[in-house]
Amino acid sequence: MSEGILSGMDILQISHYLDQLLDIDAIPDAKSAVNGLQVENRGEIKKIGLAVDLCQATIDRAAASGCNMLFVHHGMFWDGLRPVRGLLYEKLSTMMTANLGLYSAHLPLDMHPVLGNNRALADLAGVERLEAFGEYNGIKIGLKGQILKTSAAEFGEMFEEKLGSPVRVIGEGEIKTVGLVTGGAGSILHQAVAEGLDCYVTGEAENQFFHAAIEGECVLILGGHYATETGGVKAVGKHLQEQFGVETEFIDYPTGL
Image 1 (cartoon, rainbow, N blue to C red):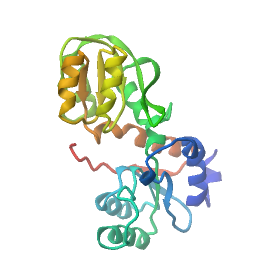
Image 2: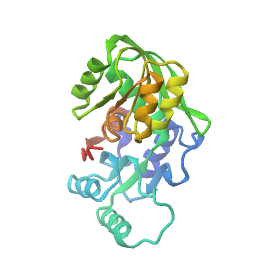
Image 3: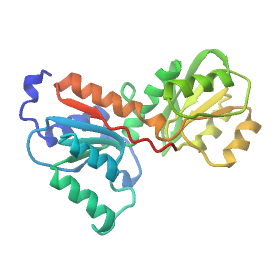
Image 4: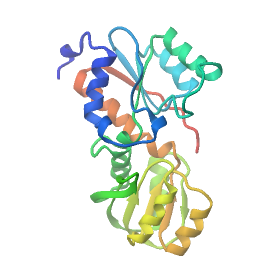
């Protein structure tokens, strides 16, 4: 689609495109994820901001940068149904004053075979011969594959350098087979152990998974919830820019977690 066709496109048209691209309606997710268009706005979309998290800081930065729309991985309604007051009111008030719309994609973004967070992390790590991995709610949301044989320490150092943030490596030994699920997916370590994978990569995990990794002889690499989920957001921004000629900006607001 050419840049000329973008002229006059509003948030409903772009949202419809994203719904089809990310297969929003077909992928089950937490009810509070509210995948798709969350906040409408008026007029032509000229600039799209992209962020991992919807928070007051990313809203303020998008508005200051002249964005008409935000695309995020973690949207506005994770706390469920609640009165529009306090911090929620401040977010919505700021967005409406700035005429800033909002689109959110959680599991549909994690899972996308080309633009997804897991695919971006697999490409970053050089994982090849990719297959679906990591069952959640009856679907496989992650990926597994193979790398050139390396040590756990070297693999962790590579991740830390490429992610640009601290990485925790639990366990040791040589790694050739790898499973990946971005974000907070520590519990899927058990599936990696059951499948005999050498290593499992995710963003964060609870205390008990330290012991599960050691006892299961599966190296656990924790790259940070935020850091492991920037790839898909950036990929969607690049896709929209190439597809429509719309200006995009990645709004980096790392949590360090």
